Length: 115
Length: 110
Image (cartoon, rainbow over all chains, first blue to last red; front, side, top):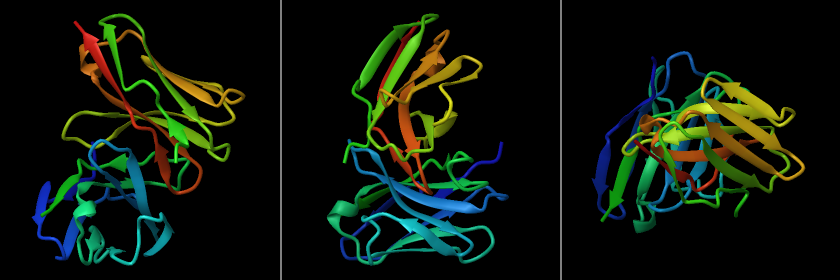
């Protein structure tokens, strides 16, 4: 069964450094998403991406964050200058069509630890 | 922000019995509701969904019930199996984003 893959599984970064989290969505999917889960809290929506542009973003997704689809397969989340509070599990997801008709399929996440 | 609430952090059920997981919501704009299952060190896995215009959807051992007037939905698992032990998330969908509850940890005891 096709799946969403995320790399790395764990990223440790010094505060203030830039970090790029990578995702390979399911190949025939057209909609891409990033979520995060801070330890002990809910999974929170960050951003959705379709047709090479952001379709929706949350208040969390401020100017420090950016997303990109640099080629036909990868989807990346960049945090420009990391803060301690960016430490979380980051999940990438993709869907064949637009919500709510098509379920989003999630990767196993990247654990980001900011020191 | 408590648009989706799962008030039971954990639930223990004997193998073979029914598991009932509950979810309440406040946002009337959700068009669909979804249930996801999550094992440790893995991402959420889609289980079952229901449109806001339906009151029941069934898929094998999993049934989701929606009570719009009470803004309440539930997931029934019958019969429960040890492999069902996981964290279950309820989510509402109205646009591009999913709004999740905090999850309920289900333990199925052999």
